[in-house]
Image (cartoon, rainbow, N blue to C red; front, top):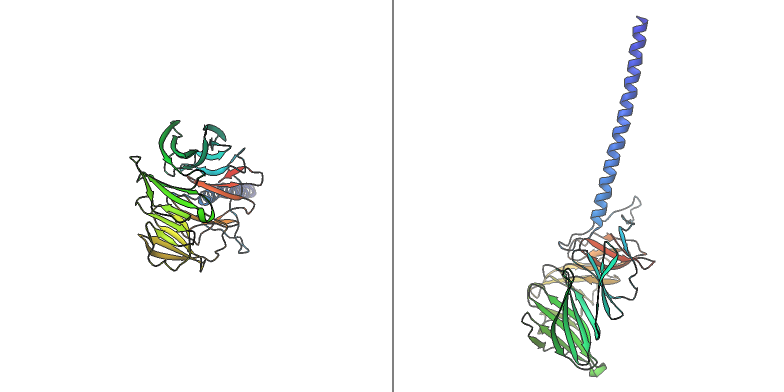
Length: 352
């Protein structure tokens, strides 16, 4: 009888030990799985998907202060000069393109490798990387001839498009385009001061050239994606939708920020910088009230309109109460696909 009690006691002790071990193992496994899921979600939430203008969730420490949720880059892009011109990222996040020493460099982002270089005997004045396909529109100038060229990155095919006669010494100030409308608008300036001449050339699919009747110096211009409508801000901060001033803005001084995928146009009031007007069909659709108007820069890729602050980004086309946080030592450089790109303190381009 005593032996039976001892055996029973030992079995109960062993059963208890097994139950404790099983609980510890289960909790550890669940915690590991949960941790990997949380990291994955945080990482994905940090990415700004420009195609549908989603925003990143803001996170908060126990102290109530905002915290950066991700601080390690996936991949670095090296050897990109800090004085590279028009650093751009493709719509699918595959390529980085920039102008340096009269050559356009095309770099494979994932491989951190230059895969092509466009050079010309004449001056490459500017380029734009299209926001819905891997194609570059670039411009060369020789004397009074402005040549328009395209380069298909995927197929490695360059094509001469058209020549425009321009004044001697002219520069390209702005380039706007619409893929769906097959329109390119080029703002060319020549002269200085009271002798400054500003022209906008429009090139359509048939390669016909039109000169728009705009003589004022242009501060900023925006061509909509799906409707031939050109908004521009003149040198006096007046807002126009070519060829007329926008109704209701004749006495308002503004700063034109850009347009989004749905052709909403974003305009900041200069009289009250907390106010952003959102226009649709030349009329105010709504207003956005900024809690902090002291952003350091604005970025628009015809899909979203972003305000860049010292350590966070707001997408005006999304929920402005949600912030895309980043380390204050990083410098925002652009968006491509689902990646946000920054330049770090060592001049590398990193992205999340």
